[in-house]
Each structure stands twice: as C-alpha cells, then as structure tokens.
Image (cartoon, rainbow, N blue to C red; front, side):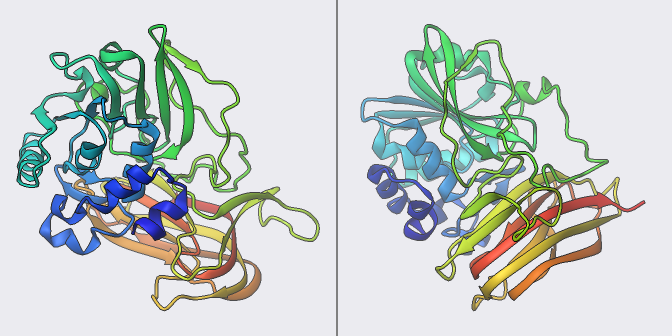
Length: 390
C-alpha cells in the first residue's frame, strides 16, 4: 500500500512512510470492513464518520512537519488511526472527538495497542483543548467553513495548522503558520472531508443544494484553482506552487493533466479537457468529486460525458478500466448503489455516452469518479454532467 498508493503519489518523508508502514490500519476499522484496510480509500466507521484514506493521512502528517518535541492537537479522533500514525513522530498527541461512542472505541484501541503518548477526550473540536494548550501543531481531520478562532488562539506563535476549509463539497487543504498572531496560509490541494459538526456546522453559511446536484467544472474550462473560505485572520503566502494533478472542483487527482485542445487534438466540449496516462497496471489514475444527492428529493438522474482513448489495455480486475462512475451513499456513508459509463478500451475518438439511473431513497451524497482505474494507456475525458430528470 505504501509503495503503490502513497510514495508514488508524492509523499516522500521517510519517517511518515515508516509510520504508515508500522500502523496496522485494520485495527482501527470495523471487522466487517477489514478487507478494505489496505486499499487507498476512506471507509465508514459509524456515526456518519469515516477513516480517511491512507494517502490523505500520510499527506496531512507530512504537511504538519512533525518533530519529536511537538505537542499536537488533533481535532476529529474518529477511529484513532491518524493519532496512531502521529504517535511515534511527536512528543504527545491530544485528540478530540465529538461523538462519545467513537471516542471511547478509539481510546480503547489506542490503549490496547500501547500508544501511550496519545490522550483523548469527548468535546466539540471547535473549542479545542484549552487546558492542554498551547500546541506546537494542530491537525484537523474534518472540515469547517472557516477556521475556528479558538484553534488560532491555542496555536503557538510560529506553530503550524493543517486543516481542510471551505464549502461542504468544495474544500481546500491548507497549511497555515501563525505569524504575529495571524494565520499565514498556504493552499495545498482540493480535498473532501466529513464536515466539522457541532458549533462549526451550526454556523455554516453556504449549504449544499441537494435539490439540484451538478458537476463542478465538468467541462474543465476553469484553469485557476479556487480559493478556500475566507477569514479576516488569513494572509496568503505568495507564489504558492501549483501541483500538476490538481484540477479545480475535483480532488485526489492521480496521473492527470489539464490540457488545451487544438486542431489536431481537440476538446470534446469547449477548449480544454483532462488526460490520464498510466503505464503500470493497477496504478491509480483518477479524479474524484463529492456531490450532494438526496434520494428523498430526487428519484432519477442523468449521467453523461465524453471519453477518448489511445492504446488502453484493461486490467485483470473488471473495474480496472476507463469509466465515468458514480457511487451513492446513505447518511452513515455506506454505499447504496454504483452506476457507470464505460468501460472504454482500445483506441477511439471522442465518444459520448449517457445513462439514466434511479436514485435510492436512502441516498444522501455521491462520489463521482473518472479515470483509468488501473488500466494502462491514455484516456481523455470532457463534458462530464450530472442532472436530475424533469
């Protein structure tokens, strides 16, 4: 998992890679989900929460730049996996979880596995842990619309905060450094985390429109990355470097580039498209996007898009093929249905495909995926759309 899903995706800190290698992820997951423990995917753990994908945990840990002398606050204990990964890298981890059942389970697991430098408590992460403050580093594994002010106050001067911020399904992961009492932010990449509940969620100003689900930047015409939610205490770092696999509106890009069309290599829609290239069977090459979908409000939807391939060889797994896929999840974030366009193999020019599918009443959100999914060759995508039927 470390070699194929994390190191190849850009995490290079050997301490972090070793911490992931020696942390038994299956110990932090429900027994019935253990078969997915070493796949690079988020998995539901109860109380509408998830254990983040191993790559996400590794990326956030590396971004935190942990030191052996650090006292770290984690907001969102969840399963305890992130705290366990941090444990050998820092002096002490203080972890807050708002859900009592999850906090108790995580505490028992961490104690059983002898992570003795991790302390847990049940509380609203919005308020932090004032009795243990100040902290050298703070890591937030759930997303508020804006950075909670108590976390800024509890961060040491010069300390680092790693946090996903923004709208419910359009978030940006930031690394922020407290400088002269204010947060200087570095925008890292688009992402998707469960929302920070409690006071943060009660104060959310922009709510997802579950009545009119749609793909953001499905034609890939937006080139500049969109900023996260603003806050008066933020100052932007200048000249933040863009990462090649980032596409506005989409997250967790792997082996993807945003390209301009031309007369010999046109886009299917507009002027730009995305291209996935993979030469190693089984290696990830994809983009994802979260979308609100409420099965109580919508009975049917239409998924459509364009795909063009060159030299595509499908993998041994039936799912290792270029496709446009949508997975629907219920309120506990368990998968209730999957639909897809494709698979697309071999070599062919732009091909338009469309399907109408029924939305289970229990659906509350969706994850849209496009890419090669382990197949080799080149696959281009454009004009990805999702809409409800009239």
